[in-house]
Picture 1 (tube, rainbow over the protein chains, first blue to last red):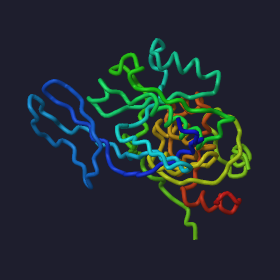
Picture 2: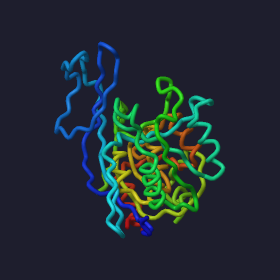
Picture 3: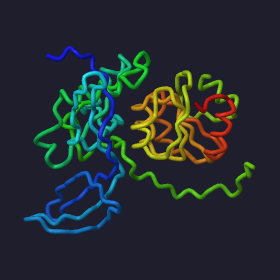
Picture 4: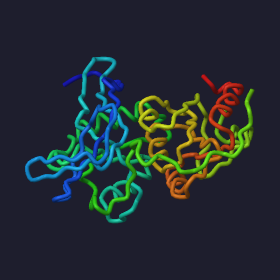
Length: 184
Length: 110
């Protein structure tokens, strides 16, 4: 067993998009990371029995974690994104766990893998523990901590109203101010 | 400088309930992925984004406060989520650049 007190940092950062495709035949959702320059919506193609249609692109990034002391690399390429519980279902295990952790000032985040693979093979817990450790090493843990759990803790994904940490739905239709003061 | 002191000095409007804490530097970005990779604990985050995902991002990055610039209207659901996680959301009438200049003159630019 390694005796290194790992100090994690992000490594191999790639910016791109999480693409969401839906089969309009069976409603299955598929997600993947794309590095296209100009991701398009509405792109359709057939794959076996599925008729995939690109329904969303969320600007995002992929990364690995590397220990700056021993150079150990942990690949995080199977992670689609993080998600925060908004307490929408009181009987959801994530909300129950969140309430337990609140007294320790620990906030729960939910990690999603790419669909549909992640349904049968969620991101391993040991990787999520390393990810939690990374975010806790970045923060002032005397104030609060982060704990990352897998998305299969969510009771009913279809009814869940949690918040994805993606650059999506961030556009504003708000008009700019009528008048802005000149700075110089 | 702490968040409450800065709020008073610059006439910012606190929208959420939060615990006061020291500010350590400033981070300017309108992309949550950028904040997740680049912001440091205790930073003051300047943005025009008001979507509730800024709260989750601020929580994950452990920023001291989020300042919504350019007099943007912040939805109530964003404010409520921020209060739940003790994240300071401060409203500011100034555009981002003007606020950044003022923060720099207060010694918070590093």
